[in-house]
Image: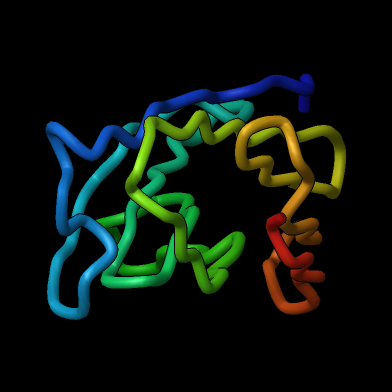
Length: 109
């Protein structure tokens, strides 16, 4: 599989309560090899899933995700063989293996 990145913005003007409990949001989707990967949030959790909506979805990561909404934030998800990295405003906040079972979470400053 080729490496790549996916970016999206979190903006307080368009998404003021997006990380509140009970709020779900699809941020987008992109191709990873032959499959589509969907990025979404469910309350204060950010997740990436392959084959979402199928009978056998594959979670790649689920990480706790809390940001201050005093300004816009850029989220970047990068992947290469076997690894996904999640960045918040260019700071690495999580690394996950292919199945998401051993995600390493970093404190975002």
